[in-house]
Image 1 (cartoon, rainbow, N blue to C red):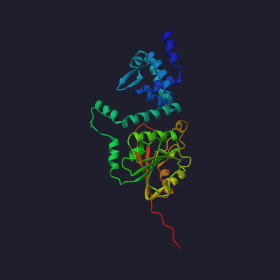
Image 2 (cartoon, rainbow, N blue to C red):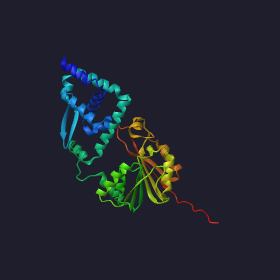
Image 3 (cartoon, one colour):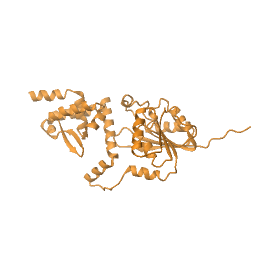
Image 4 (cartoon, one colour):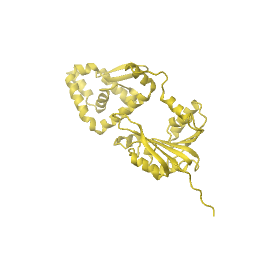
Length: 319
């Protein structure tokens, strides 16, 4: 009776039930679980410790990480209870918390797939072809080498990952963000990499601190859905483009994951292909193209790539 009482007390906590639901079909480490559950790491670690002590989950080392998942022994020894829990987990799939957890699970799995080291390990386990040195970053830089030297602005740059990649081939990069903290981290990282052609500036999407017609390429990577007025943000981006300059937008296709408003501060739940195309056209761009940049089965977030070109401005007639 004491063992049953302890077990049911453990299962009477919503956070621990969410953990068990997430760990039922996939293993995750503490850092990943912190992001998935949107909880403090100390809280996640405490719940994991209690569940492990009771034999509900098991851990395994893989490289420098420790991964957790529901223990096989728990499923077997408490098969009736697990069947009930599993059925309740399935019923909860449409609730807001479960939808948010599942969306963040897909994002963690996407990041895993994009990490070459983990992809290589998965390839080896699955006996698929392993290509030493294969790297999406190398492909990105190789394609950049085919471009002419450009003046590039990364608007809403965050910590500057895209800006630092662009700096590999651009003449100069201006990285702009509203947060001084992320700019400090970006500046530190670029200095560590020896990149001397990036300038870091604080600014808003709607008030870009750049001169008119000063950039060959303006990039907005996952920034537009944070703009209170996307049309104004795009108008500002076009203002700083040179004649013939291009705008590149990476953003989310329209979705219904409302938790991103509170958790991530998103002002918009993505954009339909048609609306994104219309926004670029209304901003004065031609040859507008919108296509899917990344999509994974089961992931509610689809990344759209949109580009447009600024035609040569007409000069005012002299009287």
